[in-house]
Amino acid sequence: MKDRLKRAFVWIWYNKSRRDTVILFFCTLIVLYLIILFVDRAVMPAIVHRGGTAVVPNLMDLSLQQADSVLGKEDLELQILAEETDPSKQPGTIIAQIPAPGIKMKEGRTVKVKVSKAEEAVSVPKLKGVSIRQAELLLTQLGLLLGEISWIPSDSFPKDVVIE
Image (tube, rainbow, N blue to C red; front, side, top):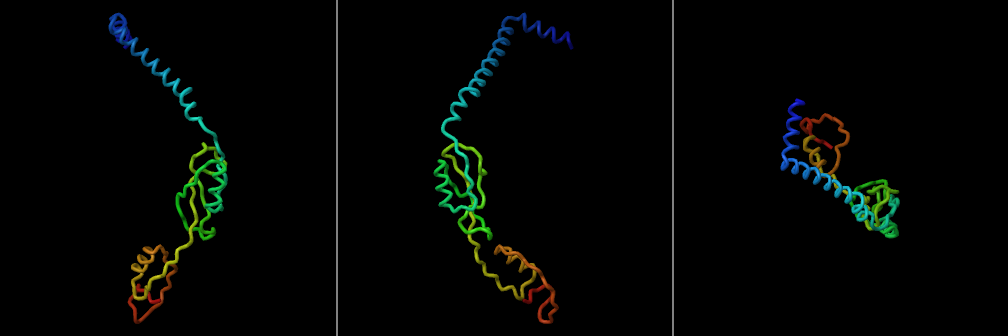
């Protein structure tokens, strides 16, 4: 194995055109590495670190108008990410935010929030005479959950059918 390596090295080194090609290849690699290093250490920080930074305030339990004015003072933008029903919060208040409070970010960036919305009223369909499986499907389609089932024998309804 050593002998092969030695012969290959001698063949490359003493063949002038091959030696020049190998030297040129390694010089090119070194120059490319130095260019990448320069761009990474000097050019990119100059581009990335432009503008000021702001600390993300705590927006939890604030209304959208209050949150917008608080973010405006920090030169940050507000974006509603989603609306979610939360019975413990007033409709229109912020229940979650991204990024978390206290995080430093560039001015002009966007803070995404999740806002509580009012619960939607849904009328329960008439389930009398419907099978339990079909009743469960109807309730699921309306976003409702099947509650506790009580079994009562009946002469006028078949087995596994809703009576009341």
